[in-house]
Image (tube, rainbow, N blue to C red; front, side, top):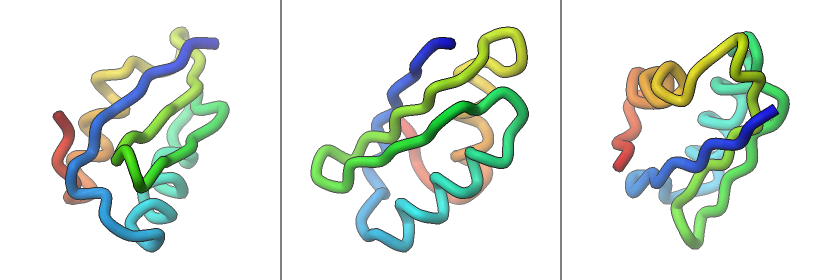
Length: 68
């Protein structure tokens, strides 16, 4: 298992946080997702044999959130 952290400057409310967490959890290989509204970061624990950080990032972007 590995962890990737993404800066999501458009993460501004608990509804956004919940939407991203639930959306990412649906992906194959995701173990856990946590978000921090204050720092605007999403941390994802994942199995690198199933998914890459780039794929996770693309999924979050496709949900309408900017990622730096």
